[in-house]
Each structure stands twice: as structure tokens, then as C-alpha cells.
Image (cartoon, rainbow, N blue to C red; front, side, top):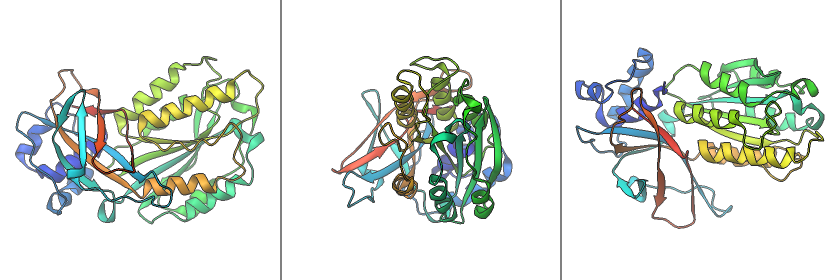
Amino acid sequence: MPGVLYHMAFLVCIGFSHRGAEMFRGVRDLAVPALLGTIVLATTTAPCQQPSPEMVGAVTIVTVVGKNSKQPTVVLSRDDVLVYEGQVRKRVIAWVPARDQHNVLQLAIVIDDADGRRLGHQLEDLRKFVLAQSPTTSIGIFYALGGHLQAAAPINPDHQAAAKALRLPMGSSGDLVSVYDPVMQLIAGWPNTSARREIVLITEGYDFLHHERFSPDLQATVDAAQHAGILIHPIFVNAGRLLPDSDSIGRSNLFQIAEETGGAPLLGDIRTPESFAPLLTQLETALSNQYFLVWETNPSKRKGGELRSFKIRVEQENVRIIAPKKTFVP
């Protein structure tokens, strides 16, 4: 089921009303407290329009950064953003910056336990990143080990506890499994919330369970993340395995997962970065420049909704848009 993300951004425009409830027809009720919290959003001055009665709202999280590294922050208005499904332009009804009262983030850091031979002082970069996060950001530390997800620190606002939970990966324990299974376990067990939900995935990215260039677990992870509205930001780590092309295939896999889920591809080259600091600076820029985008679309004809492709264009030049390739439509 989709998270409260869909409900939250859509309620910005329609308010918590009988008409709004009708727009959610067919969607299973979610946590009432999270929904009640969205009533506040309907009273803000966020620029939005009323959707047509026969339509529903599709929602996604969009990252907007400058193509020029000297100007990483770009401010866009709703009128600057164009949304297309195929060749059909759709009406944008909300464009809400994820700032101020909307700047609530749940961030899960997932580390492949098979990366141990190539990680060390980079953990200190991660600790500094965790401790520097906003009080409105909750962080969890997880390890992918033997095809299972292990929580070193559950997602919570205690940044000190999350930083202390970081440890060196164990090394070879996960060599013959897929790192994507634990990521899917995380997504499946992640409670619905009105916060943005995002993952930092630190791994080589190769599926050692299937030994295939096009991993079925990779596509399943992409589908699950798109359905839940979760962005995945991968950091490539070369674990030093001797299988032919595992590093280049893994890096390609991670680029795909970032591109299709709307994450920032923090990949570098095929070597493990000497420091994570430059990559985490890129990630911080991305997290600080996100928007909730809602547009008007036709409701799904499928029971339970569907994943629908879309494209975003902007009127301004020198702007880079990072967004998922698909979003859930009820």
C-alpha cells in the first residue's frame, strides 16, 4: 500500500473534507493520527489548485539542484514545473517545498555487511553526517547480512544513538546473497508516515544470489520503493570480490536504482571512495532541496491502483530535476 505521502501532499489542496475523502475512494485507511496531522497543511499558503471532481492526485518527491556546482540551490515556483504522462501535459495542483513545518524526514542508512574489507575511516564521515542532521530528521542504522536486515539502531530522532550504532561491516558474511532482499524487507516493514522516507544504501550493488546482470531482486526493489514513495540514494563500495565484472555490474545496478526511485546516485568510479564526505555533501544538498509535487491525473482502472510513468520538465535553464520514473496512482 502507498504511504501517507500521497495523502499528505494531496490534502494540502483539498483539505480534510467529505470531498477529499471521496478522492481517496478505494484506498485503505491509514494511521489516523498521521492523517489528522495533515489538516494543518490545508491551512498553509502553499500554491495549489483544486482538482477536478473526476480526477485524483498523483504525488511524488522531487529534488531540484543546479547543474552548476557553484549554484547548487535553485528556487522554482509551481508555474515553472511541467508534468507529462506520455505526450499529455497534466495540471500541477501543488508544489510544496520540504522545508519549515514540512521538513520532516525519516532516513535509513543500510550498509552491506559484505563491504568490510573496503570500509574503515569512511565510517567517521558517516558519523559526522548523522550528527549534523536537523532535529526534524530521524535516522536508523541497518546492516544487510546473509539476506536479512539487522537493525543496529531503529529509526528515531536520537542522532547520538544512531552515530554510536555505526560499526565496521563483517566482511564475507553476505557474499552469496542479494543485498536487495534486506532493502525490500526494510520497505515492507516501514510504517506509513507523513514524513519523507529515504534510504542511503552502501554496497557494491551486485546480486550474488542470482549472478545475473539484470537482477530480478533489483527490479522488485525498485517497484517496492516506487509504490511506497521511498527514495534510494546509493553509495558504491568496491568490496574486492574477484568475480568478473561484478564491480561494473553492481555500479550499473546502483545507478538504475537511484535513477528509477528518484535518489541521488553517489557512485564515483569503480573504486571505494577514500572519503564519503564529498558524496555526503551531495546528499545533503539533495535532501535540502526537495519538493512535494502533486498533479491531476485519471484514477487507475486497476484494483488497488498502479505505478504510472511520468516526466517532469522545467522552464528554467541550468536546473537538474531528480525524480522517480513512476509513482503510485490510486
